[in-house]
Length: 202
Image (cartoon, rainbow, N blue to C red; front, side):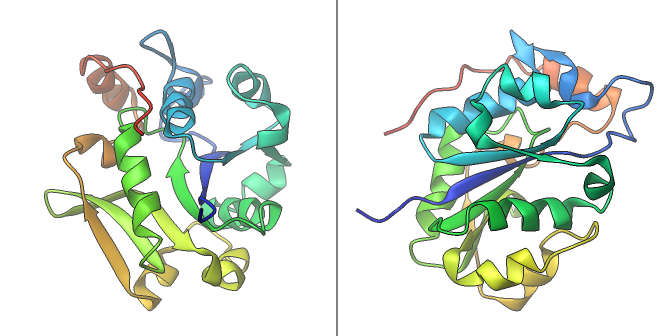
């Protein structure tokens, strides 16, 4: 059986757009938090994963996952941007069959969408979810792109890699692949969605 890709959950951002001292990932949502709800979707997928975070959010992360599945960045590293977070996580899991990049502030995503992108990596070097023609997350990268991924830095993320290689859109019936929590208004909308429970899909 082919090895499964690893989900990289990005939870090291500064939450600057949310406002105030509170971090968006700590905000209550359903019976958990924004990050906890996202992690529930990832855990239910059955895929291996690693959460990239900071010391401030480590207790929040450890409420849901084991320490071995967490990479803690120093604050100065985290400030280097999402590209650095992705590179650090990929370097931490160099033997993975590939990597699915998923921001930690996407609690409305379905488990099935995560699994669908993972499946697509068996036939494509890059794959991403798409809802009604709009590109969403996660974005998946095959193991052959390891060198490109560990060279990432800054806030641009992996956009250049997606543009450089043939990228396959996985059409899903899941608006949650587009919806992240950046502002209090986003959180209010998420709370009004009536989140379904995370369910493992065979």
